[in-house]
Image (cartoon, rainbow, N blue to C red):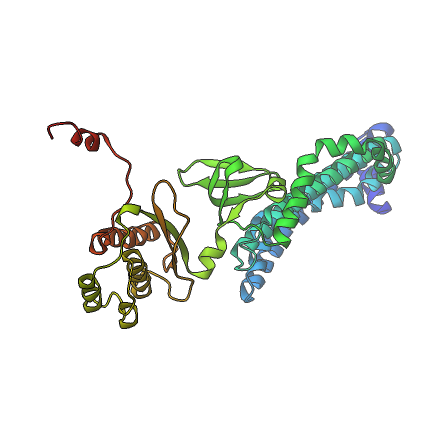
Length: 398
């Protein structure tokens, strides 16, 4: 390099430049050469090495390398080349000016730190996109983890920039920040709690994007659309958005309906309130008719005092077993609950084959439509509070 320095100085002397002008002219020429070299290396990396890496990645069966070597990431990686070249070659141009060299090197280091942070952000975004495409990782709340990595890298970058500006070791600055730990904990409280909660939610498989959850405390009833470091977004069925802090999902209780969809059955648990005045013993003619209609068996018909409500429960149980809408592998039950002032509750407990909300409501409605319509066949009726029309019928002269 010394010979090139002498050639530049002799060329400038031939132009009748003074000693001071020659010295600064040589430095400027060196700076231009360094700048051109850095730009050329970055261009070569962008136009030759990046297409080569992308072409090699397309030949592999794996998909993650296609995303990792895409233009958004590799172009940010190419930005690392100029500051590295400047940092290595600036001492040649400004070696005789230590103060100016120190300023330029610090600016170069800060630029290198900033570009590195941008590259880390791009890599984290790419990893998140890769995880979305993966069947196993797609349902994991990993966005909060990636955001925490970006936040940590940003904090480290800020500390490194401060250390470069102050000319002190980064470890010394970190030791000084130890005294401000309480303030930092207060500032980043939500982020820290969100990270811990995100790890717990992921490790215990409590929540996944796409789950239907219900949390009455926050008025949430819908599907999880996004799990970030500080918020969990839920799109309710009325198309509104509810945001919940992740740590609230760990500290408070919520209902997750995922297992219902996984098992393939959705529960029906609904009661019919039977008017107690209509419960009576069956007549022999009714028992004979029930036998002919196969509503009761021969063994049931031998009972001396068969109750119509008992026959109705057996009919409902048999109807559920033969219904195409009811899941036969799950529990089916028809039971009588504690009588109340509003009638005798007959609870129907079973599971439909459809977990889709619309189909579930349709099938549930058809089942209870039939159970309501068949009540008069057994001499039963539902309990119903008197309405204005009923009271009107009680007027004298009617």
